[in-house]
Image 1 (cartoon, rainbow, N blue to C red):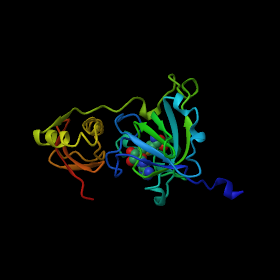
Image 2: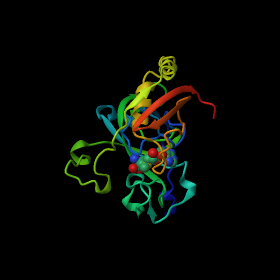
Image 3: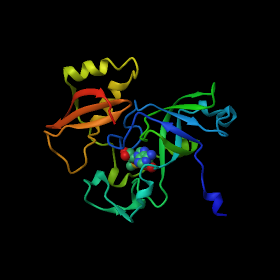
Image 4: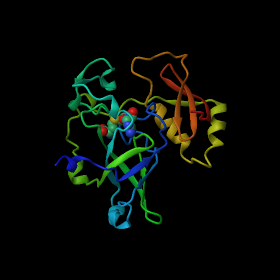
Length: 234
Ligand code: SAM
């Protein structure tokens, strides 16, 4: 019986997010976070995705593989409550759960079946290399509940304005041939204010790793300023 609950990933997601820092806390907040979900054998047969291209969005069920070994506690401190107040793990979308399973909706930009199966996705909130357990079509009349009440996360987060230094603008422009939406993605990611809830040091320089880039920035007086976009040296 136990084996029925031992899941094998059907594929792996390849996203611009090379580390947890900077990933928005939910999907759709950075629409230019484009990803590829490559299905693995024996799930990568075109028959497995026949008809999927008629849907605009999909649900992804995945493993929080990067934090799974850290276990879980009955209560967590959601960033949305400032990082101090505690709520129950099942009242949160925390990565630290009894079963480290996540659920995200993503925009389905395309289905490629020329070499195996690759889904092109937008707006993901998942780390590069995330194992995917299942894919299901998003069905608006069932899955969308406009009257729903969002508890302590009722509404999207406030966004910061994002400014570019001349150096950063030139650096990102030089990379657009390879990653055409890199500048839009950087703005979406920094507008979320990726800093930990307890940090507000206007002099502190941060780096967020996107694709093969390290985006250097500060946040001061409620404005995110991109200082430079460098090659990433992990
Ligand atoms: N939408 C999903 C859900 O509700 O289950 C994920 C929400 S969770 C709060 C989003 C965060 O998970 C991201 O900001 C990132 O820090 C983290 N994350 C994304 N992919 C991960 C992975 N593969 N392993 C561990 N943490 C991950």
